[in-house]
Length: 515
Image 1 (tube, rainbow, N blue to C red):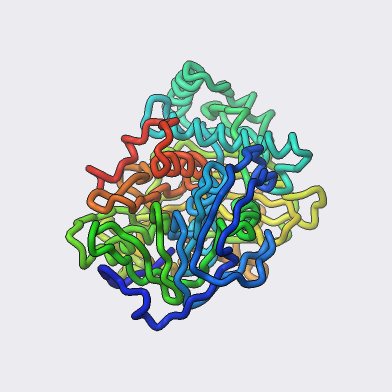
Image 2 (tube, rainbow, N blue to C red):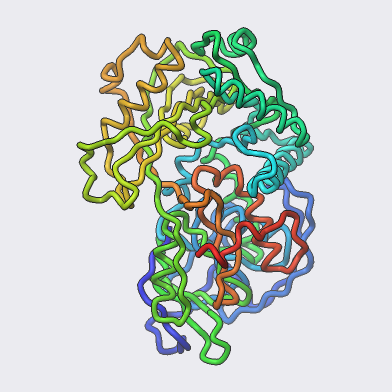
């Protein structure tokens, strides 16, 4: 989400045409706090923070002051204000005494996070794979967070849109059903609650679903979902609790221009943004989603470090249809094809063909469906059709989410009507009630959104230090799993920087050998 142009060395702060101003920092302060905003009972240690700035009127916990044209110092600088960047900031704030700044060329929820469906699922993950332990750890951390909120008398549904819906991985052929039976066996052997549902049992659980004799499903009753936008709002509020203590600041709508190196050690000591020079005492974390690769290329262009981060955007469409009030789901659903994206069709007439990359003009479409009750009052029912999910902008509603499409089209975010039609048709193959209306019936009451998720060729995120630049770290490439893996990523990255023992083996996600 950040942008950059050049890599500078050994800067002289006094030579720049910026003035020094504070972002709610103190000349000297110490404190101890216990945060309930994060659902955490962690009590931070006493902190002594010294800055060269003057002390302005301090920001409130909910709205920190962001300074312009200033030199400021933080322990950790995080580029990217998506779910990954914000959870990493949270982890440093509740798990250490380090100060943190989050920098973004835009604002939260303007990238993949804003279109996150919120699956916290294990149904489509494979026991023994590189992502298995990591996925389990992340899911456990989300569950710990929601349990902690409940213990404090707070409502995880209201704060995070959190629901334990359970998930259904649906197959419609004898081959898919046999595969699902084997998957259920593996999941149970790995310690999860899972069962195979025959066509009759599946119809009882989901009456809206089209079921025939060959239909079956793997059912995981403990899988959950959350609302991406509520989760970001919760994280921001919790992070901002530390701004008045001098430990947290946000620099939104402030693109990164360059990294600044020390003339002696060669370590990166600061970054220059469009309005600030921000110094780091500990680490810089690049968590800019699908922009992370091009950003690192620009930032390291004038250095001796050669790094090719193969993360790239995978495009998807979202269609919001209002007042569709005759549909009900009891669980989250996903077709078997979602696991390996087997359904692909050519798009020879796609208008963005000139922007497509070497992967060609292909579209992968798989059915996913969730229904989210966001609050105690149902104001209206809307249906969302999407490639990786998003929730409506109003705070209280009942919504149905259907998907999903995947497409390589570079950084193009142009709307394609052919893709929207294909998603609608695919959903109708699973839910006959959707066929009662045509997509054209919603021409006057629809909203289309297009988003990009950060894809890595090997299907695993990149988390770890950048070789040759000791204090720069990457955290990107989660594609559609950013929300589900966010807390695990934050814990892993923070442990690396601080030097804590690993909770999960980080080797499969290392930068070295993959970039």
